[in-house]
Amino acid sequence: MSKPSYGFLSPQPYMQSAIDEMSARIDVKVMEAKTWQADEIAAHVADCKDKGIRSVGGFAQKDAFHHILINEGLGNAAPSRLSFLYCMNKYLMRTLETDPFYFDYVDPLKESDDEIIAKITEWPFMLKNTSLSLGRGIFKIETPQDLREVLKAYREDTDLQNLIASQYASYLDGVDPASLPEIIPPFVAERLVDMNKAIEYCYEGYVTPEGKVVHYALTEEVYFSNHQALGYVTPPISIDRSMADKIEAWIEDYMGKIAALGYVGQFFNIEFWVMPDGAIHLVEINPRAAHSYHYNYLYSFGSSLYEDNFRLAAGQAVEERTPWVKWREADPYRFTLIALITAKEIGPVSDILDYDYVQELERDGILVRHTRQRDDVLSEADMTAAGVMLLQIWLVADSKEETIAKEHELRRRIYRRPQRDAVYPSYWDV
Image 1 (tube, rainbow, N blue to C red):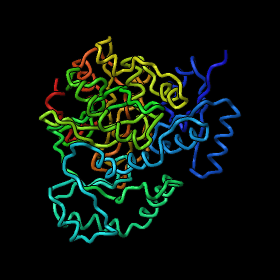
Image 2 (cartoon, rainbow, N blue to C red; image 1 turned 180 degrees about the horizontal axis):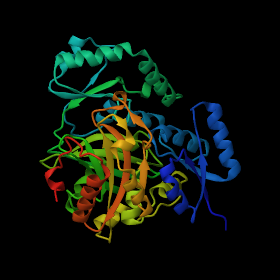
Image 3 (cartoon, helix red, strand yellow; image 1 turned 135 degrees about the vertical axis):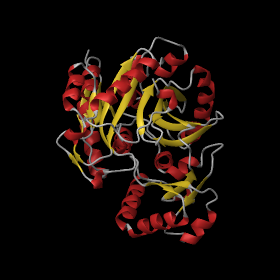
């Protein structure tokens, strides 16, 4: 019998080993989708039907809407435009949370500085552009002057305004205007969370074509004390299975509202905080699976996120024993950490990292994702508050203690010079 075929939208180089592993069971067709234009989407749909491709999967933010458009064309269940809009707007997604902490909308084109300043009830606070991703457009606002400067910059950035408007026009093509929320703002103001007290988690789940929420996996996000990301560990180490019921109830409450807007036949990725008192609060939702966690679930539990995504989108049965179920029921598993290797200094990347050591890791079979190349030269323009991401490295261990020890050794050996300000949280000390 021939293997079933699925389309993989714009895979990145580090995903090749996953494609090779899946190819023993399914036929993976690599696809490149560039625009949302109707003629291009129609061509992709026709090509899929020609080749017997049952569904497509998009795992990066830029591929999430292509995932919907092409699967719709193939007759598969896919998220509605309205539910996608709520997932793509950081203000709208918060309006569905049952017990949110402080937030409010900010619209610099419809409100004056004084009107916005007057309505902010918590200072300092976080101001986030509701549409941007990858950490862009996020500001810590401490004073009214800070706020005025950000608002002024947005009002002057007509290119950004036009980009956001064109994206929304595509998302909402054919949607009844009467069904849209009254407020779809470009910014949200929200509580500034102390990341030295709250812990962030990344939850993966999906909604069946019939609208049932299914629990898939949970990963803990680890940060240095200066809020710079250290890495992502699966399963979590700061909570145990006793929290599972509470997390399931919170997810089902929140995602039930997203599903009611038409979010079906797709994975979703939710980041949330667990506060010191145990309360759960939304960080954000992404309308797709988180592609880098595929390897966490594969190494820790033997599950294939990509393959499960293809099957779900095609309306086929997905493996019932998800990583979440295996974790809840104490099946054997390993810990997998994506160690994030960043730089906060300018100059050649090869002067910052020891690439002889990187090659040693790769020869030992450790997966390394190169987000920057060794010959790149970092400039001040590249710098963000968190620095510049250079590598992501997957470490696998049998215990949380071994996981932490491996990460310490990696970070000690990979940098040519010790990194400033990288102070470990107390629970990550060895």
